Image (tube, one colour):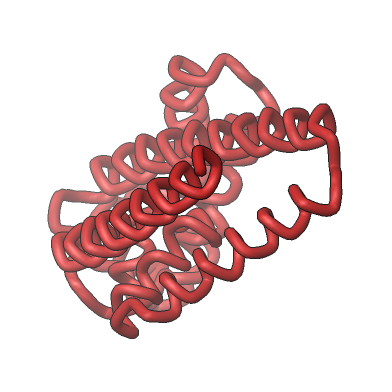
Length: 188
């Protein structure tokens, strides 16, 4: 196919598999190289690029290109690489916390405290306004990007950021109050 990117984008919106195949052929190597420059991990880059093309096909009917197909694809790769780093960081933090938990003495008192802490956090999260709570859960528990959350909840990215800021502020305040109460009981 010698069609322009704009024409190909229009054709995939019309469910033309040949147009999708041409976009895949044109952009696979470049997108892979763009991801590899940042990640230096062949498997992760292949997975990220494949996932991008899968999402492109799945959401082809809702595709809106304001800056052109090429810019759209390379921007999407950039955000997917950032998301990959974020997920990797969460996994590393979890493994570190899990390792620390295994090193700690799992006495009954510590288990009770941990259960109380988890229950307290759940109460605080559940006390958040509905949209704020949804944004927090999607961001922190399902590891969605602000852009993905905005699409899911049909709100702007700025609104997502505002809800997330409010949720984190509320959690910090509640955890600070809990920390002060805990210190007061420890130093009686």
